Image 1 (cartoon, helix red, strand yellow):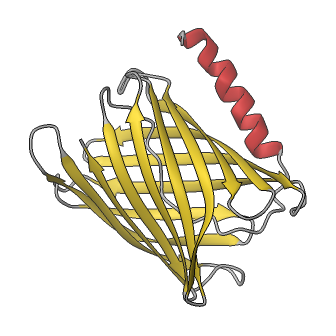
Image 2 (cartoon, helix red, strand yellow):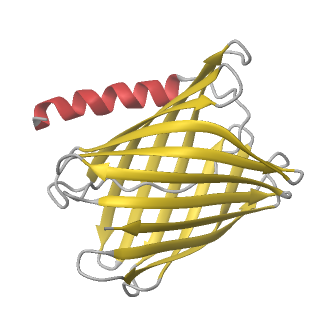
Length: 231
């Protein structure tokens, strides 16, 4: 994609994100995405969110199709009141718009389409991914626009924000602070992450965090976990 088209793409995404009324009611804590794609990368990812005794799990398999495009498919399961069941399917595509360090901020975009397993309910998300480095400090921001529709749900538009500041202490351990904001969600908390080498071109990435609710609608404590094997 030529750079002259990137400002237009970013402008359209920002308009969709910020003019959308924030009216939906799902928890917006998940993970913070980074705008980079590695060529020839494949991964298996599991992540989970736990709050008030309920859990949401995602199991994904992804692959880069170029040095700019990464696609991943997910199975989404929920555990509510000890009832573990398949809840939805999701396909996700991420595009890296700029080379790392090419501009003051690195840019990417992401799109996700989710379909409920049992209901006629759909969700489409598009996000603007940004990242900037200051020495050993890294700041990341995800700005989301979300649309839900289907026979069993009201058509809804909403926006969400995820922020992360992390310190690159070492490859094996990076402390971070994250903030999530959206309808019925406002939380902040510490996260730890790191990489473990598993052979030539292979590594295990892990993340664990506790996000604390800052308003009356967000659970007091939301735990998030992630492991990702890249090969």
